[in-house]
Length: 202
Image (cartoon, rainbow, N blue to C red; front, side, top):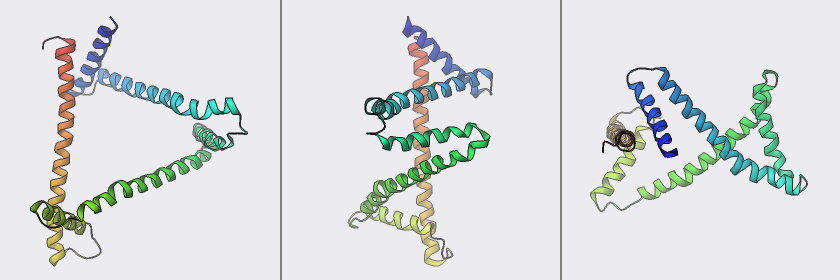
């Protein structure tokens, strides 16, 4: 019985989302709000049970502040963020937000360099003993030259940038095609759910 009710609710919400293909309507907005609300509720539960409770509440309850004084730092920063709800104290929330943004940017830059830039550089340093390697090196060099703006794109540099533009367009086309394939696969999954699990036509 529970599975049947869940199937009907899922089918109803799916049809509500599909109704946006006609025009914006209350059914679509209802499904959108349900999705956002469920996502936020799930995130709050995950944050409480897997972050706040085991890493903050339980250590403080078991051992107290004396053994976990460093936990005061994230606790104070978290409380300071809540001051955004009060217009007179809103500027206090800028401190933890700035700290969070700074840490996030630092981690992102470090991760990008170690996880993307350096592996890409290593993958580009290959012997030119095959057409694949030659095309890869030409694509890397010409694409980099396309983003070199210290000189006007004329002569040899202009020809290199035109070739680089072709490689960039190929990349954009492949990325767009992959995105479309992913979205179409999601659409096929929902249609299969409606016809198989809900209506039992297939």
